[in-house]
Every structure is written in C-alpha cells, then in structure tokens.
Length: 523
Ligand code: FRU
Image (cartoon, rainbow, N blue to C red; front, top):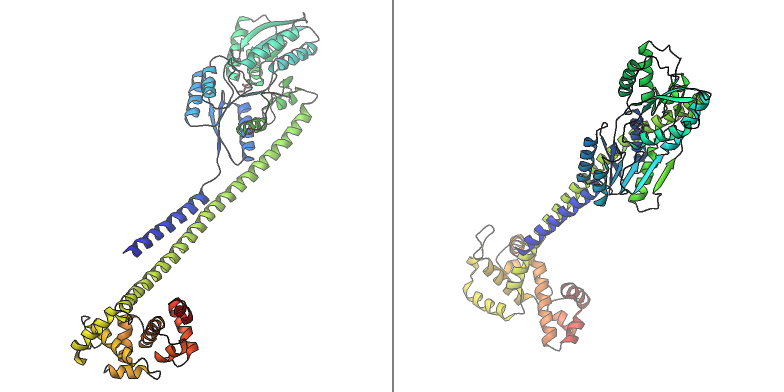
C-alpha cells in the first residue's frame, strides 16, 4: 500500500515537473508596459506612433499601449486613468492643454509611474523627463523668415494652434517677438485654428466675410494643416487669386501631403520641421525603466523648410521612409517566424512531456510488478524457508506429523496447502542438502513429483526455482555453522553440500554481501 502511495506521489511529481517545463518554455521575459497617451490623431501623430512602434521592436521586453484623445481634455484624462489602472510601467504623454491634463499626469506620477511628457507641456513639475523641439524658437525663426520674405512690408494673417496648448502659446510668442522690430509687418488677424484644417478653414472663412477689404499677403499657420485650411478658405472666397498670398506653416512632415511636399509643390511657401522622433522617446523610456542615466530635459533639433531645400529634404526623407517600410516588412517576417518557432517549441515540449510520462509509466509499472514478485518471494522465503530460525524448525516438526503425500497440491489446486507443501519441500531439502551430488530430480522424487512439476510448483509458490532454494538453504545453514561451530570455511562449504569452496564463497558473498571469513571473524 505504502509503495503504491509512493509511486503515485512520484507520478504526480513527474507531471508537475513536466508542467513546469512547459510553462517555463511558454512564458516569456518580463515586459515593460508603456502607455502612450496622444492628445490628437493626425498624420503627425501617425508618424510618431509608427516610430514608437518601430523602436519598440528593438526592445523585445517593451509592450506599447496607445490611446488617442482626439483633442478632448476629458477623454485624455480618462485614458490616462485607465492606462494607469491597466498597470502600465511608464507613461508617455502629449497633454492636450497645459492646465487641464496636469491632474491626471500628477496622479500617475504620484502613483510611482515614471512620466515622459513630450512635445506639449503641463503646468506641473511632476514628470520624470520632458522631450520636445523648441516651439518658441520655431515661431521666432519663422517670424524672421516671414519678415525677410515680405521684404519687411506686408500683412500677415495668423492661424493659431489650440488655445491653452503650449506649442500654440510658444509659437505665437516666438513669432510676435520676431516681427516686433519690423514695423512694416502688420498682423491683420489672429484666428483660432485648433491645429486642425477644418477649424482653420471655418475661422478664415468667417474672418474673410468680415474683412472683405483687408488684403492678406501671407498666412502664418501654427502648423501646416491650419495654413492649408486658410489656403482653401482664401481660394474659395474669390477675393484672392491663386498664388497672390504666401502660406507658411509648421510640422514639415515627409511623405504624401506632408509639409515638405507642399513646399516643393509651392502650396506652402515654407514650413518648419517639427521632429516626431519616436525612437528617441522609446530610448529615453527604456533608460528610465532600466535605471540607466537619462536627460531630464531633451531639446530636439529642427529646421526650416523652404523652396531651396524642400526637394533635397523630400528625396532624403522618401529614401528613409522606404528603408523604414522595408524594415517593417522584415520585422513582420521575423515576427511570423518567431511565432512559428514558439508554436514548434511548445509542440516539442509537449511531445517530450508525453514521452517522459510514458517512460515513467512503464518504469513504474515494471517496478510495481517487480516489487509484488519480490514481496511474495520474500514472504515465502522468509517465513517458510528460514532454515536457521527456531520457528521454522517447529513448523518442520509439526508438519512432518500432519503432511502426507496425498496433501501435496497438484498444479492449479487451491492454495490452503501451499505452506505445507513448501514446508515439506524444505524438510526434504534440509535433510538432503549435505549431499553435493543432490539433483532436482532427487528432490522431485522425494516429493513424488516429476522434475518439471516440482519446478513449476516451487516457482509459482516462491518465485524461486528449486535449485535457488536449495542454494539459499545451504547458505543459510553455512551462515549458522560459521556462527556456531569452529569449522573452517572449506569444511563448512563441504558440510552444507558445496563441492568447491571458492564457488561457495562467491555464492555466500552474493547472498549476504560478505565473504564467509568476515562472518566467522565477527562471531
Ligand atoms: C499634431 C500637432 C502638430 C503640431 C503639434 C502641436 O497633433 O497638431 O500638427 O505641430 O501637434 O502640438
């Protein structure tokens, strides 16, 4: 029973080990979960998100979770809270406006989540790092460009970014500072553009209705999309002929309908590259998460785009984008390959697990079988064959009186008389073992059986053959003699029926683990 219990435990343990092996091969590395809270959703954000994603590929322990607030403060606050509840390890956030998003960012920061504020500022100091281009500088440089483009004289219609968002404030301030020393430049209107083309279009359309007599030489949009919105409104108004007004914006995106192309195609007169640099943001995030050194404030480089450099910039950026697309494709391929590899690995482990289980089951079955045979054998041999014990001697005397030849069970007969049979057989062996010429046939004859019958019966009852039992009996008696007489080893060997002392010594060692001399010494 106890043995079966142990085997069950061993079997269970094997299953647990295999399950652990499978789990460890299925489980991956520890992941950093990074939440990205974007205030808007537009081509600038798309480009940046793609870069974030791309750079995250280089860190196989980074997982990104994106949220876009579509220019809504309320939505962005909710999204930050829910990213936080999802258990992100770091927050990257472009706050829609300076004041409104700060409480949510503070909450994350106070919870111990590192925060990277990028591109737009908050009113709070609770952030881990800030990364952006210099929006004031961009407004200022663009202002200087406009002054020189208009040769110091002309009217400008400004389309501002979302009120309350830091780039809108800073670009406006930079621009105003740049033109304050140019008295010939007159800002005829400062309209809300909210960073979007439709809002800029509507504001400009309204303004034109109320300012039919005012001529606009140049539109300065806080970004390219608002400049283009104003352009459409002016083009539709019939007050302006195409190309009579210049349009300047900011963002200078590469690619289809990006600012660089618009400048090359003369739809915009100038733009300013507002770098997205998702790669640098991810590097910064990983450094923070891994406890490596990082800069708290990072200023990104940017540059003016004009008709002079637009063509070259476009060619270069197109080349870069082509390479990025190829990299993306390569990554997809690698991803698929890795996925297949993962599946294959799990299948392999499963197969190994099944094989191990089968092997364990076979070994357990075999051990179980062996132990049953041994238990049975030991019981019979120990209880009935221990020639040295007094108990067995008593049994011998009793059975001698009661056992008749007729009592010997035939093959297949019931087992009540089995102990008696063995006892009688033992008596025969004990009586005749001293004869070194004794054969199984002799023993069988004494038991009134054929040699084969005797073999089968003894084997079935004890698990041992008659010859083995004869040898054990001789060895047991020899053991007793070594303990109780002064006879030397050879004499003992001959006395118990061995014809060669050397063979006797070998058998003795096999049976008792010691040579006869040692038993003699210890007695
Ligand atoms: C993108 C965008 C850009 C602009 C920036 C200002 O969402 O509107 O066009 O330059 O945000 O934060």
